[in-house]
Each structure stands twice: as C-alpha cells, then as structure tokens.
Length: 272
Image 1 (tube, one colour):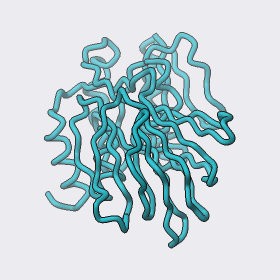
Image 2: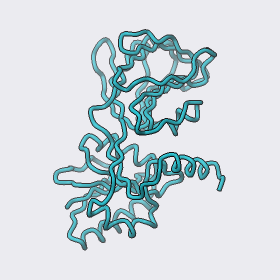
Image 3: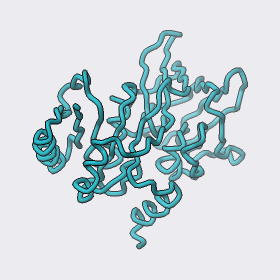
Image 4: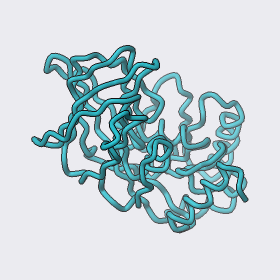
C-alpha cells in the first residue's frame, strides 16, 4: 500500500505531523509520499490520501487530486473543519480502520470551471466549494446569467457565487444562501450584496450548464474555492458545469451531515 500525505503549506506543525505519521506508516511496511508543495508528487501506485489541516487544505487537495478518484481522509488541524472527518488526536484510534478500508465513501459533487476569452479556452479549473465572481473595489459587478439556452437574467452587486452543496456552508451561506444536503446534485446561485431586490438565491439542477458573461466590471476577479484567482475581463465567458469526477471523502464515523453542520457552526460562532 502507498499513502499520500498532504499538509497545510503555511503551518509548520502540519508538516512536522506529516513527517511523524510517515515514520509510523513505514513501520507498517506502507510506502509514503509527502506533498511538499513545491511540485505535485507522482500518484503512481498511491492508494489513499491523508490530509492534515483544515478546510482550506482539503480544498487544495480536492482541486489537485480528486480526478484520481482516491479516498481522502481529512484530519482536522485547523479551526472549523467542515470537510475533515476526525481530529488529529483521534488518528491513532482510526488509523488501522483507514488502512483496512473499513469506512464509507461520501462522494461530493465538484465544479468544472472553463474560462473563455474571444471564444478561446484560457483555463480549466476544478473546485469543490464554489466559483465566485466578485469586485475587488467598492464598485459593482454586472453580469448576465445563462442556464443552458435559457436567459436567467442580469445580476448586479458585489458579485455572484455558484456553489456546490459542499460549498453551501461556506461563502454562499455567509451571503444568504441555503444549506444544502450534500447528497443532492445541484448548483446554488447566490448574489453577493446585490442592489436588485428581486434577485434571490436560486437552486439549479447540476446536469445543466451555466454561463456567466457580458461583464461590467472594474478590478474584479474569478475566484475558485477562495484560493485560486483569475483577473476578470469584460469579454470573459465563464462556463460552469458538473465535473466528470467526484471528491471521495472518507467517512469513518458515520455522523449525520446535519449534526455536523450544527456542531461546526456552533464551534465557529463560539457557542458550545
């Protein structure tokens, strides 16, 4: 067996923990590769992935490795940890089960974001939470939304979010979007501080394709999972559709989703 360890590139304690876990796994005759961040490691013969960090580290791992369809165990060394499954102090208790494959897989919908300019594909990015078009200044961003061949209307405000059910508890929720059951295959369109009172969050079936275009913008960006950014140009066309693969989240505890939501939100707000 071969396991890839992914740690938070900005927190040294996760790097040290990855090195410590690697030693313990090697004692069990398990090969280990550590994602050091300088370049993407080879996934040849890798069977499983362990991510050490918080939600941000999980999001990075999803964008980089989800296409390989490997089971990913999130171990929380961050703050909230919506996407992680166990805490770091619980890892010794659950490691044998993880190695033996004694767990469920929680498949999560991902987005494929294609950015076009002059009808030429400029970039394709996959993301787990959301793609957001937003202003970097106090000036508004205007855009047209198209769903398949249907014109869905004009949006104007600080920006617009297209989120997955996984991302429904992140940026979209902060902007007034609903919490969505991750078993659903939907997109959530959430306006950001719009001045058009008729524009409310919208639920869209994930087998449709969305287009954002005809931008009116000044210093705005396209942001995937809050981490990867592209400078928005007025003649960009953003195509958003369901990715051809899903994020394979390992579930060792079987805790119901809405129990996790309640627990994590209360933790984030300091309510215990």
